[in-house]
Length: 103
Image 1 (tube, rainbow, N blue to C red):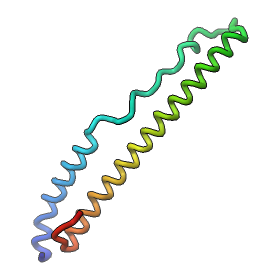
Image 2 (spheres, rainbow, N blue to C red):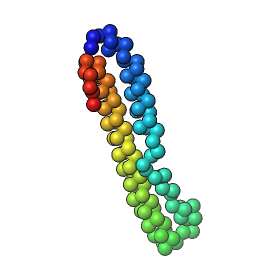
Image 3 (cartoon, rainbow, N blue to C red):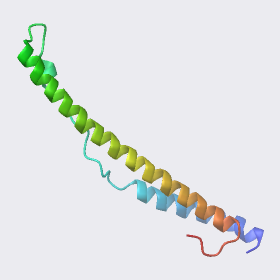
Image 4 (spheres, helix red, strand yellow):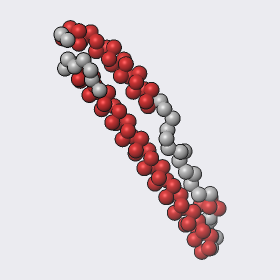
């Protein structure tokens, strides 16, 4: 493949890569919605007793565990997105170097 053919095919390849990447990123999130903060925080006040604070602390600890799982899921999705982006860019580079079959 000569340089002219490569240069003429770049817009098409970029368009296709954008469409494919956009389709991959447009998929619904695999992560659930973020957990809601515990409602006990709204009920605590200056008159909260030790039992109410202990109960709320348990709810906050549970919230923290659920939020950590949610954040881990988002991080995994971000990693998948970066790998897909890199794959698309590598494929374009392969074609730009004259490859005819680029994974």
